Image: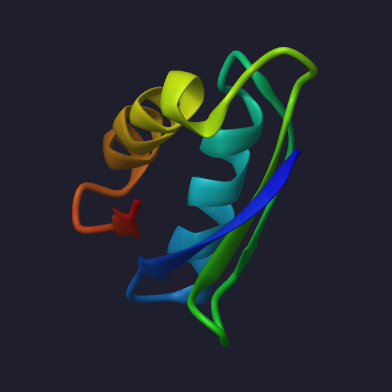
Length: 72
């Protein structure tokens, strides 16, 4: 399952850090962050739902970029 989220991030480097953090989260098969469109696309591993995983994705992103927001 793939889902798109609106995000708020200040710079392209921060977006890259968020993307790496999201990819390393358990339950995430792939993640792409686009700074220009302020969107994050997350593909979840089989058997995982956005509700199961996105809280952890947000926590991991906040560790590398405290000012970021993901609108769930």
